[in-house]
Amino acid sequence: MYKILIATDFSRAAASAADYALRMACSCGMNLSIIHIYSVGLPMVAEGTMFSQDSLYDLAEKDSLERLSLLEAKLNQDADQLCNDSSKPLIEVFSTIGVPAAGIKSFFNQKDMGMIVMGIKPEERYLGTLPGSTIRKLIKWTSVPVLLVPMNFPPVPIQQIVFATDFGDSDITALGFLAQIASAYHSDLLIFHNRISAEKGGQFLQKEKKFLDKVAQAIDYPKVFYRHKQKDTLEEALAVLDKNAEADMLAMVHKKHSMIEELFGGDKTLRMISRTRVPLIIFPQSFATSPGPARLGERQVHN
Image (cartoon, rainbow, N blue to C red; front, side, top):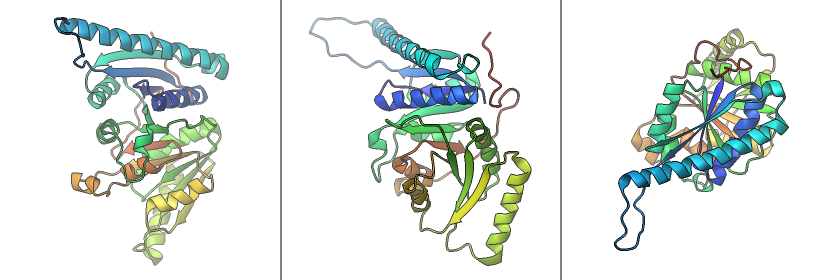
């Protein structure tokens, strides 16, 4: 995991996400790539004024690159203050025309990114409101984790990461990824399970033990803990941790749902995005870490 892709639209939410990603890059030994996907609308012009399609494309690209250059300069300046010389990330910027979700997906597939970072806008956190279409599409399409940062969230050091598990096999790989982040911050990694009413007695204890045994075999990090609670929903259970300020970051695996389930609120991931007050990492169900120098602290040097 040596590159973070920051997807920006230059909003305040995107700025918060970029600041957060920079500090993570400094702590974890990762480089940064920033992408802006721009589009060309139809301008309001005076009668008789002519604009060629090519000139509209040129103007949109010029504006995108200028704003990216300003963002790059700001992050480099901040990195000089925040990072040691050895931990200062390399920062690249890219601009391309297209539809945001598809453009971001195409880009991270080409550039071998380890994680995508985006901001959560206020309208995507109101109770019952589904996240924007770009976020919804990305968490379905992506093969890498997506880190969503609430607007104006302070980039504080991570002391505890809370991972919500249902004891699925894909959770083990996600926990390995999170253990690398936790190790960089020397933070706790809390595995959290919301025990539903159907999970009872010896059968539940056996399932729980089997999962935790797999975790112990797969993850070599001493500050991994486990807790379960029993609430009506996962959101209520995690809200207890949030209220008690026990989590600096939440994480979960996105399990596939039908369109009907999404429309009627059956997708736990979308509900968590609209409610979270701390950064949330969402892993695809088929997540697998990339081979090679994809571990924290093994920053790739650009040629």
